[in-house]
Amino acid sequence: MACVVASQYQVNGPIKALFGGTNAEKRVKEAKKLLLRDYAKASLEGDMEEAISDLNWCRKLRNQYAHCQWAWTRRDGLMFVNLEQLADQPALITNITENPRYLDLALLKNQLEFCAYVRRRFMYLDETYKAWDRAQQGIKQPTLAAVKPPKTSRPRLHNLRP
Image 1 (cartoon, rainbow, N blue to C red):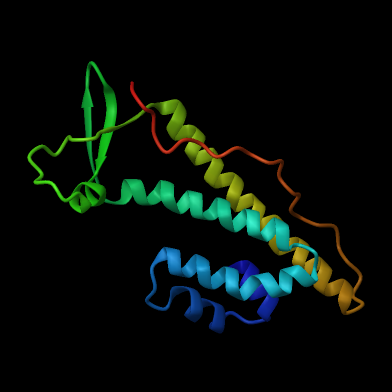
Image 2: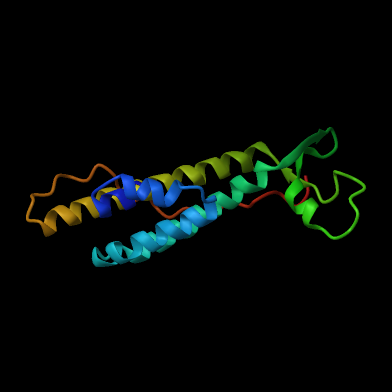
């Protein structure tokens, strides 16, 4: 949202456009539509496209946990079942633990670190766009507060087996 605010010079429109009764996937699509033209002018379109793609991965990570049932066993460790996926299957549901997804602390930390990386990417894009915009207006640019973070690989959604 901060990137849209920076490109539109106001907060009302971006907040209403991005959070006005839409779901997260629609918000991301709307943000992309609002951002790409302006960020392309600043030669940041590729970075923005990549950041939005990574943001969608974070959304996918979050969504798998949003409606799930957690379990733990001595043999398998931590696992969850995505209830939305279970509900979408055409077959009769007879066991809530069908198709479990396994996790461990290392993967959860990796997922958290990736989402923090994506946040840093948007902070960088926001600051870089603002600096570009000030330069277009002939305003002397201050040193960027945010640095472009090094590329980080997307983590798995879950482990195949414990």
